[in-house]
Amino acid sequence: MNDSQLVISSLAEAQQRAGTAGDAPAVARALRAGGASAVVIADAREGMDWVDTEHARGWLAGTPQSPDVFSTAMQRTLAQGFVPADAAIVAKMVDPYALPLFSWGEAPPARPPCRQPPERRLDLYAIVDSAERLHQVLAAGVRTVQLRIKTPPSPDAAWHAMLRDEVWRAVDHAASFGAELFVNDHWQLAQELGATGVHLGQEDLLALGDAGRARLLASGMALGVSSHSLWELCRARSLSPRYIACGPVWPTLTKDMPWVPQGLDNLAWWCRAAGAPVTAIGGILDASEVEAAASAGADGVCIVRGLGPDPRATLPTFEAALAKGRGHPLADVPAWPHPSLTPQR
Image 1 (cartoon, helix red, strand yellow):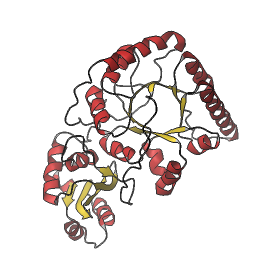
Image 2 (cartoon, one colour):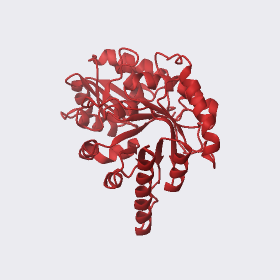
Image 3 (cartoon, helix red, strand yellow):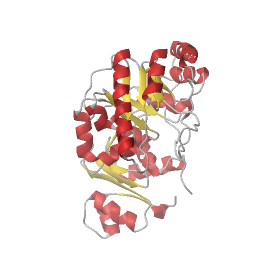
Image 4 (cartoon, helix red, strand yellow):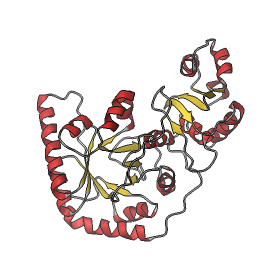
């Protein structure tokens, strides 16, 4: 990214450059429309910076910095290979692990609501695509499960009926085994049918808008949130979730994603900085990977395919690996994370 593509300035300078007297979001939009690929308006509102990039836009709240100081820090971070959205997060951090707040939209970010500490660790976390498979892993001894049934491009009445039945059965199975269930995506149906937890990706949470996210939080359901980057981590923690998923830790074939694998170093950093329990996800197939994720501090370790066709046979090995990993001294935590998305050149 060359200097002409990046604008880091005060609001007054940005207004002059854009030729408009609008507020920070409007001025940034004008600059982006004029060719800037990333805009940071430093100290634009009560110590907050407005960030508008390809990947994320919102208010960044932390230690106030002058535009010159912010610009120097962000240029240094960009040179380390971070995309602008993550570079702005790192530039705002005056100390390692001291993550700033980052808004979901044009409303300023709010402090995370206080939650009671969880009563249990998430431990091994099985992600399944049917109530039948969910019952199978519960019967084997797993006590944290996610039902993930993705919506097809054109769902019909039969599909919606199937989904309702699957969620209802999953809720019943989880209650019977005393397990924590997280329903992926379909949070209103999950609430209606009595599920106590839901997992949502960042795009789904953005699509809800401020009012929808408020309704979700008011539902009282435990919330799990995906995160792959620093800006996603900052947004996730603002919702005071039950857990934040860090991934992909290792390369995975389950999803086609642009993210660079986090590795154990970023996983350990997430566990230190997130301010919420962290689950490791992505490419976890064997016991050695479960052990390593646990030794990095993961509260939960997600397994999608690793349990195989007979979880009763494979689960004891994974449980032993989890216990062994937690018995190790915690892995060294780096002062700063490495980039998890490669800039496009």
